[in-house]
Image (cartoon, rainbow, N blue to C red; front, top):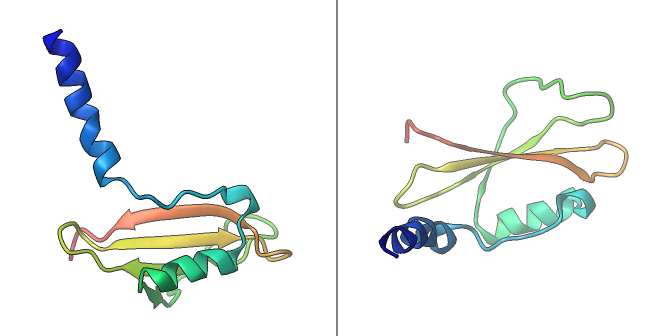
Length: 97
């Protein structure tokens, strides 16, 4: 019984601290993601490098989300040039901030 309680106490913070933005990446357009970033008051970052992700994939659009307790989150949206549907979302945390 004691180990079962420890198991649940281990995973409760994951649900509490997790993001509540849920959407299907395969049917989401880039405009929807930009709207979400605008609501979160994220700052758009310039691309300083060229990314090679494959044929038909455009250069990613990057945003920095200001955080108070944890390091700032940098979000990269990779999308198809043809129809602007997302192909990948990448999250990284700026450990130097």
